[in-house]
Amino acid sequence: MVRLAKENQLDAMNEIDNEVVRLSEDSQDAMNEKDNGVVVRLTEKNFSNFITENKYVMVKFFTPWCPWSQRLAPVYKAASATMKGDRVPFAQVDCVPEHELSRKYQITGYPSVFLFAGGVRTFYNGERARDGIARWDHPMEPQKNLEQVACSKVASYAAWCLQ
Image 1 (spheres, one colour):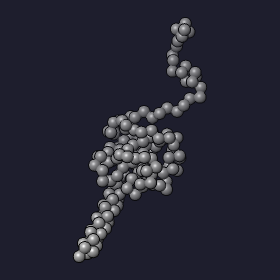
Image 2 (cartoon, rainbow, N blue to C red):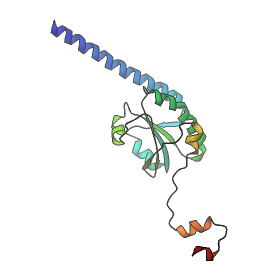
Image 3 (tube, rainbow, N blue to C red):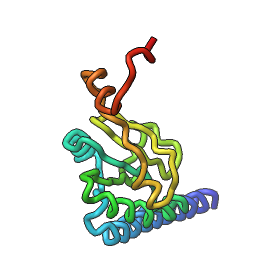
Image 4 (cartoon, rainbow, N blue to C red):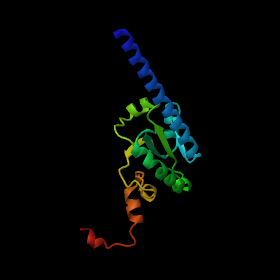
């Protein structure tokens, strides 16, 4: 009798696991249809190449079951459409099937958004609205000749003021 109860529990747990996988796959299919090529889906196989091939990349780490990820999805897509001409690709990683990427980048909350600039990531903690994401200032590239850059921003100066 105890053995039968344990077998029933195992069967029930397997059914739950299968249902979670099915729901995750359904959510994945729905998200694929919605993305329509504006937001690139990254996986373990294409993540590194995509990050290194593009100077700047916005990457959202999400899970389909998270209400905050669901809320950000249309906003993120709209921001990517706004930025499309600026050659800043928007990408996303579904952390359910891509749990190794999630672990590698120490994702502890969903959704997490990062800007990768030259392969280096910067956490985006700005406004979670289309215009806020699109307006976010990207880090400037380091300049080799600081004096030339500084002087190019100054219309005129008085040398006696520098003392």
